[in-house]
Length: 390
Image 1 (cartoon, rainbow, N blue to C red):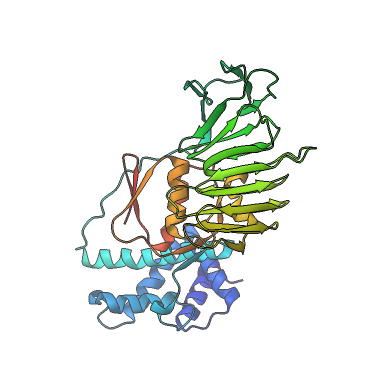
Image 2 (image 1 turned 30 degrees about the vertical axis):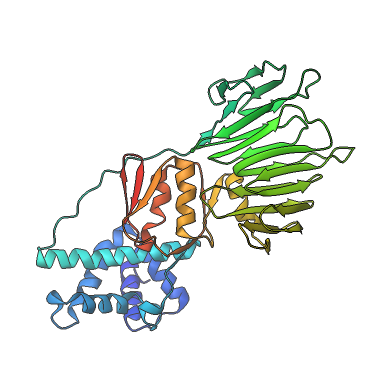
């Protein structure tokens, strides 16, 4: 029976000749990940390195070609490949293995020349993930922190009452007194759930807010929001419309489930329908559109409302407790991390143009999230509460 070291050697040599099947390439990657085989792997890289002329004095461009010959799965030039990181299980292993082999080449070069400067070690101050909590602003201006009360009854001077229980705020239908406005807002690093006076539910993502009356009276149920809020609207026998206002836009529903993303740093407002039917109207452009489940409207200043089909799982990832980074820009990913971990993000140079695919639990520390970006060549450091990308 062939030993693991022997099989690694066989697969490595076949890779040099571009003679690996896809199954064999995955097998090579799995062997390259094994810690006990690292000395064998270093010897293989050492031997491959010395097969070139003037191995110890290779210029960078020749070293790159050598590495490409060892690792490339195709003969297509590296510059033509798309800079994309796939997080499916086997490709995650592949990406990690590329780093291991590259590290072996780097280790050998450094040991031969002994002239490379030491790498500065950056102490990474980890950041915990966000949690449940919000700030309630009453009609008289008083503010109540909703993440420090435990179970509690909150009474407004107008007579309105709300109950905070197990991290959720629930309003009781007001039977006397006049309705007044309340606002629930989440800072960065917090999210929150509340039940409105009509029984409708709203979930606030980080850095979001919702303003609403303590009782819905009259022909409309109207609230205003900023940031990102998911709604499950309760139908009423009298079919009183439920209206959400944000950023020069109105969304009218009778009973439905939908998500609104209206962060001020973004140029547009995105409304995504999960169930039911909503009508989207823009104050800045004379038009309206009706959405069907699975559709998203995009409203921007002075342009027609755009309607598109979307991945509901990605839109609702934040509420379901994870990040979904598929098919969104690196800048959008950093915006999500900034809001959830309550950090600032700055760039030394241009914003990286790299795409990712995959999901990650929102309950992990920031350092765990950043580990998944290392294979893309992006580097990070923390300066107080600022994440610097370079």
